[in-house]
Image (cartoon, rainbow over all chains, first blue to last red; front, side, top):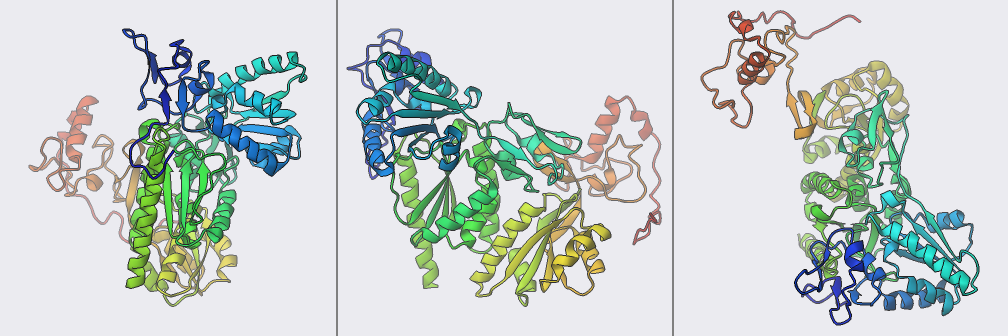
Length: 389
Length: 215
């Protein structure tokens, strides 16, 4: 991938030469983005419908799908480097949607060191890479952390990964690697309510895209089976009575204050929906840019943006999914509305341009980097304009 | 609930300009949009930043009160914290500001909000709309539960006026004509006959200002 190129490059492509038109991909695609042309029999991928989950990539028996993110080569390359860096023979493959802190991963699996591989959806990890980790990299144990099946942002990703692991475990056992070499767990990060702080305003109940919240005896109550962990209710709670596991307000505040002090000036903080842009596993950013990945743009909190600006960050870029792609129904739209309100307030003190909301989708990998480049330029222009005043 | 709007930041910064430490007090009562602890922390950050841009150093601590219009709750929650600051900035309506002025006579208090009206929160349309004028002489029983005092710019008791067109008001064609709504609703309920009686002018002495009720 060449982030400098302005030609739109699609993240997924079918290699017609290798495709045997077996239709495994089209039967697994959760978004009806792949279909068989009834006339030619060819498999067609409609990139505008594609959500870049990579389930097709990991399932294609003919290696006929080209993926820009987390393809076999880049995963293998990353694992080789990471094995050295983390010096462990345990690999933890985790979905960003359900992966808590590394310390919590240690607790969850009862391990003290591991090589982390964090990806958007474990359903995109081909079985081959797990086998390769064991056979060529000498991994003794693999742990896979997926979301609960009904929490999976890509609908079928967690289920596909679970089936894949079951098959691989059988194979590995027959090959003499032992029983359950790959340990598979499911975990979901959901809302927590402090009913003592709740003021019964009903914002959570009204705005929850999944009907998970209601008012019970004047205070918020959640049906956690329905909660999909987008964090919209948390961002809209006027009383700070709600928290989202792993993305608690105080945890985000301390990340913001730590990152604010380490970003080189002119400094950009990116608050990014983790489904809107997929970084490489070992991505190193410009020293003037730091990123906080969030479960949805809905968890981008105007209060945190104000904090970042207060801590001296020069610009905050919010990367959200386009409304139609939002994995939390109204998350991206509501986020845009809240940030428009914040910008109006900031306009009064001449800082309107310091915050920018951009919809980006991983299906065109370069768009996020283009937006970042343009925003950085704009911030530099703003700063030199202010310095000249 | 009481609807407020944020005062221009420049105005707030001007009246705070002589202070270095301010307590920004939210209200968890009825203010809309919500002016609780989240709003306090967000505005607090912005005010600190804005003062820095003016070359000043302002330290804003934040808190919230269950109901700022309640003297007891306001005194008990703000008094201990007020000792550490030079002034209080209230996120509540005019009642909250005045309650603070009343119960904490030794510290200056300022409004961060303009208090607009008593409004209904129409969630689906995302609007707050004035629907009760607190006139002290309720006539909703004659008007199908729709108040022409608050919702008709002319406050007509016998409407609509000649300016009602296609259900909209001549004063602001974006707004519904209250009397059009009243007639349609009464018609639907089969109660249009209640409008046959011409209503005499209201007695404006019903509730002389300032209103006061013993509890």
